[in-house]
Length: 414
Image 1 (cartoon, helix red, strand yellow):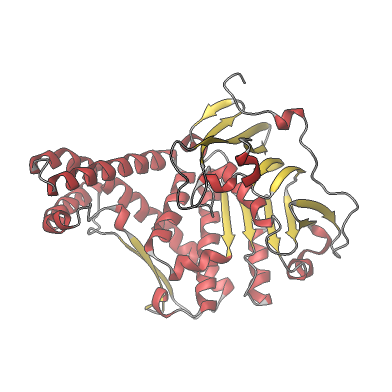
Image 2: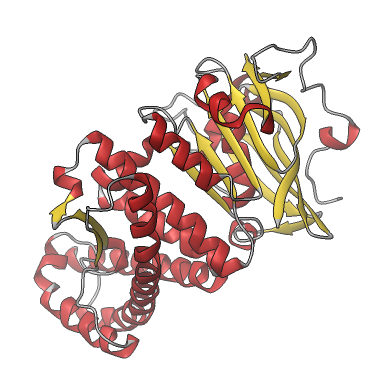
């Protein structure tokens, strides 16, 4: 079992100086909006996934005033896994832009560096060290939003479960990028059609394998989704999940490769007009259906939220099964717009895992379920204060100025 035992933040958004001792079990962070609760979970997610779940650009995570002065932002976490201890640090170093500020108005870039137990790592090498599953109010888009969000759901799930999948996905993305560039050159008359042959072969090989892995994952997720959906909703509803790749599925990877070649040949004229790669895993989707009706089109808001919860619960179950240890479970305002029955069922399921971190604006939503079993902290203006279950806040914040160890920057001399 793995859990985060300490979180130290420096110049991370509104949390300029924070040092928290964490434990396994359930911890609740409550308080008004825009005070730093979601930022806490964002930092934990970064330690696991190496990317933010809400930043369009990594410059956004660095406190603006600190970045203007060239100060580094740090996300520093200690993870306990049995007898092993991992220290994971993500450093964000602002660097002045050589050109004018972009449309965000920010006149700097950010260089990110990752270290695990002082050894420099890539983002790909960090993913899978500690797994996380994030529940958020925005998860409704997994049901009613565009296909890109569902593809991202599958890619993050499989990347945490299997390092080979992540490497294959990275190779595939590079192939698509190179092939798209060549398609543009072809349209401009600066390349010949036969130059596509190599990239077609690469696209087919990498794409067919990714499609197969996603399909297998969906087959494993489906029964878990059905079970969780029955618990959260009506057992009379028939839930089905249909994976919809951009090429025909088949019984083996080699057969899928043949189907890819056929699909590429059929898309030749379309690709010349776009010009961009028209088929492949970057075009795939999956559909959630109840009694044969597509929930993306016909679900009520309540149905869509329940469906999204089933996906996240199935994700956690999948990771626990494949990795042999449960993920850190993060619930970011995920209990809003939920009746008490579903809220209690979700909390029952989530708290089966080693560590659960919850944010809420309404303490009563969780207090009536956990009582004294959870730890409570009040978050206000970037400070985190210990609290009792009744909402009585302590005299001193749990955060403080970083010590010498926390305040160190990441550099090559470490």
